[in-house]
Amino acid sequence: MPLRPAVAALLALLLAPPTPAAAASPLADHPSPYLALHAGDPVEWRLWGPEALAEARREGRLLFVSSGYFACHWCHVMRRESFSDPAIAALLNEHFVPVKVDRELLPALDARLIDFTERTQGRAGWPLGVFITPAGHPLLGFTYLPPERFRALLEAMAGRWESEGESLSALAARVVETLEAQTGGTVQPLDPGRAPALEAAFRDQALDLADGLAGGFGHENKFPMAPQLAALLQLQGRHPDAGLGAFLALTLEQMASQGLYDLLGGGFFRYTVDPAWHLPHFEKMLYDNAQLATLYLEAGRSLGRPELTAVGRETLAFMLRELAAPDGGFIASLSAVDDQDVEGGYYLWREETLTGLLDPEERAAVRVAWGLDGIPELEAGQLPRRVAGLEATAAELGRPAGTVATQLEHAAAKLRKARALRGLPRDGKVVAAWNGLALEALAAGTRLPDGAAFRAAGERLYAYLAGVLWDGGRLARAGHGRQAVGEGTLEDYALVARGLLAWAGATGDAGARRFAARLVATAWERFHGPAGWRLASDSLLGYGGAEPALMDGVLPSPGAVLAGVTLALARTGELPDSLARQAAAALAAGGGAARDGPFWYASYVRLLSAPVGGEG
Image 1 (cartoon, helix red, strand yellow):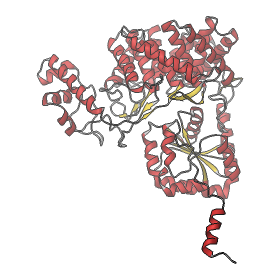
Image 2 (cartoon, helix red, strand yellow):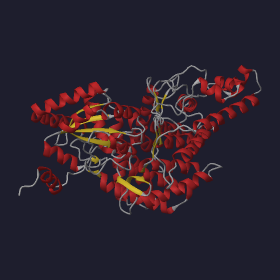
Image 3 (cartoon, helix red, strand yellow):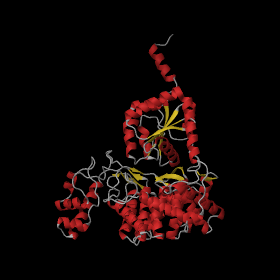
Image 4 (cartoon, helix red, strand yellow):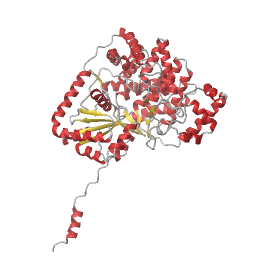
C-alpha cells in the first residue's frame, strides 16, 4: 500500500544526510583581537597559510589578502564600511579567496606586501589590500578605499581575471622578477676605515632632513623615528656638536610637550598628522613607548637634562600601568578609537565636560597651561598639551605659582578620574620583539633611584619570555595569556636577544646572557644565508627573497641588531668566533648598503661607528 505523501516526505527528510552547519569562521576566538573582530563579517575570511594558497590554485581564483592591525583607525573604518557590507562580501566570497592578516603576527608577509605596494603604487599603508595570484605573486596592492570604489575594483578584478587570468598571472610573475632583480644581488662591503666618513654622512643627511623649527624629521606628518634619534644621540656623546645637540634637545622637548605625548596619562602616540607635533593619530604602541623610554633615559643622562629623564621614567610608568599583561608580558597596543568608535574619543575634551568637571579657577588654569580654550579640534573635543610653563601661566593669571600648580594637579586628577570611566579597546597579545624592546627599557629603568618597580616588572617579563614564548628550541611570535602564538621572525629573535643582553648588563643575570646566546645562534641558522637576511623562515609568498642588509623602520634593523648582539656575546666567549666573523661581515654589508642613504641604516651606522659593546 503506497505511503501517504506527507509520511513519505517526512521519512525522506529523516533519512537524508544531515545538512552541514555553516562552518565556524577560523577567525572566531582567535588570540588576535583584530582577527577575532572580523569573525562576524559576512566575508568568509581564511587565515594565511598553505591551505589558502592551495584553495586558490584548486579553484583558479585570485587571493584577496587584507592586512591590518587592531589599533588602526582606518582598518576599523574599512571593516565597518566594506567588509560588513553584504554585497561586497558576496563579491569577495564568490570570486576570490579572501584572507585576513594581522600584520603584527605576520610581519614578514606584511613587510613584503607593503614593499610591493610602495614600489608599484608609490604609497602604502593600512588597511592594506593585495590581490595575489594562485602562484603566490602579488598583482595589485592598495590602501583604504571607500566602499563604492572598493566594490568597483572588485568587480573589475573579477572580470579581468576571468577573461585574462593567464596573461595577468604571467604579468605578475614578470613584475616580481623585475622588482627582485632591482633589490637582489650583493653590495660592496664597507671598508672599516670608511666608518667615520659614513658617520659624518649620516649626521649630514639627518640634519638635512631635520625640521629646525619643531624638531623631528620631515615637514608633513611626524613620526618619532627612534632608531635614528638613538644613533644621533650616541654620535653626540662621542663627538659633541652644538648644532646636533640643540636639534636633539628641541626634538625631545617638542615630542614630550605637544600632541605626541599624552599629558594626562603618559605614553606616546604613534605619530602626528602635522609637522608641529600638534594633532596625533591616537593609537599607542608598545614598540614606540619602549624605544622612547630608553631614548629619553639615555638623553637625560648624556645631555644632562633631568626633565628628559623624567619623561623616560613617566613612560615606563605608563607601560606598567596601562600595557602590563597579567601573565608578565606587555600588550601590543591601545586603540586609536574609543569604545564608541570615535577617533581619539578617549583623550579629547569638550567645553561642556570641562566646565562640569572643573571649578572656575581650575578651568582658567588649564586654558592657559594646556591650551584648552574650548575650540574643538576634532569631533570629540580638544587634546591637552603643555603650551605654557608654570611661571608663564601664573603670570598670565595673576596668581602665585604654587597656587597654579595645585590647581593643575587637581584638574589633572579630576580629568584622569573621568577618563577612566571611558572605554578604550586594547590589543592584548604579547609580541616577542616588542617585549624585547620593553625589557631593554626596563633594564635602563633599574638604574634609576626609584627603579625597584621596573626591576620587578623586568623579572616578570624575563620569566614570560623564557617560560611562555621560548620552548627550548624556538621562539614564538607572540603570546596570548600562557599560550604561544605563531612563529618567531628575525626581529623577534634579534630584539629579544638585545633586551636580554641589556637586562644581563643591568642586573648581572648570567642566565639572561646564556638565553640571548641561544637565541642568536638559532637566528643565524634560521634567517641568514649566502644571499643575506630572510625576515621569516617562510612567508609562502612568491615575492621577496634574502637581502644583504635591512633598513631601519619603526623598529631598528633586525639584521644590525642581531649582528651587534653577536659581537657582544662573542667577545665574552659565549658565541664562537665563526659567528663573530659572520656578524662583522653582515655589518660591513650594511655599511655598504648605507652609502647612498645612511639615514635609513642608522642602526648599522651606530654599530660601525662604535662597535664596542656590540649590542647597538
